Image (tube, rainbow, N blue to C red; front, side, top):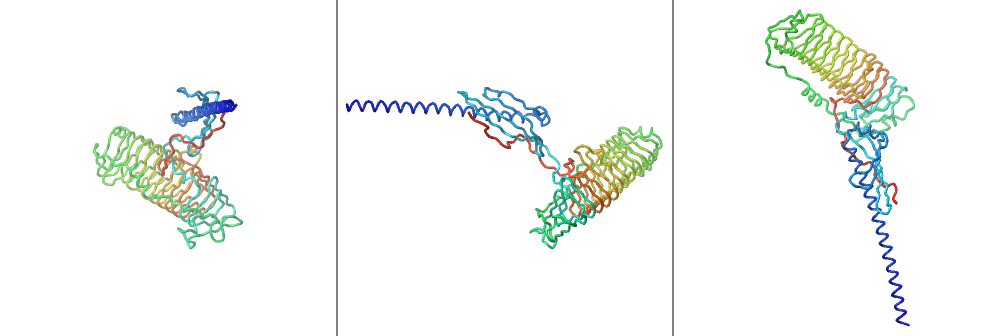
Length: 474
């Protein structure tokens, strides 16, 4: 009986061990199946990211505007679905969902939100904040700042109850800017001041080295004159179109005097005109200048001028006395003056001293206006022509002043004071190393504009995971 009892016990233990081993094998097999399904699903996410990275941003947005589903290639047992979600400042967001399968009907669902960056550069976003000053901002008239706000390192004075902005802040008092250098005043009941000091204090703003940036622009756009060509003795008066036609396709070096062109409807086409020894060029009649370059001491257009694809490199004054149309050109001069109604499209205007706009000028395209001195706008400036993301860049080491009604889509980067003395609408942004003075009725809409002549920042390139995880596991 004892032997039989021991045998039965051993038999029962054997059955128990066998059952446990069988259960462990089944459990291990199920875990392996689920693991294979998980790896397949995760591989699907990686495959979707690789497909996104291989496409141009515009192509990807169009192709995945609606969900696109497909089977994973290469024998991987998964299906993926990719869909465009939205665009952000850093790139486009996509949703990738993946279903992986393994043996024994195992299934694993995974999803990821990814960001696709197109790379390249864009204008530094500091230029789209609204009004930003390293000194103090003075608001003396009705002012609205939409989609942006107002910042002064040393504070602000708001002398009107008709003021609206998304935010108002300063950088004082702080370790960098003591209370003795800080000012805060705001008319009416408002949350902008806490006693005598700004209510919201943030880190100081550094608007950058304008002088060094202007040096780089001059180096890029200023061109030296050619030294080899047909020599002509001056002074010289051109009175017929045939004389101008004889210059076409040539470099003309004029020595010993000025050049006066007195031809109604004159056409200067494909000419390099170089005046040596400090002499000047004057166009006395309506003129068309195409694909031509002029180097002189002074250049004056007394009548209507139509300039395209040309470069003017003037030591002293460049003056437009009549109606002017300019496109795809470069003007580098000691000083630049506009006195009539003008249209300036995708043109670079660089003044070694001051720039004066005494007329009504419409700026469009990616136009850049830079001056080492002051800039003054005295007339009306139309903003209707600027309907895309390209904007006028206005850069001055000195002051910038608007007088009268003048509306502008552009970015203003100013080393001195920025002043508005009349009614003014700005779509873009203002950065000043000195004070900002709003003395009229102002409307500012902060908008991210692009201009390659302003400081740039690098954009993300490639595909980056924002979030990634399992949806379900069977």
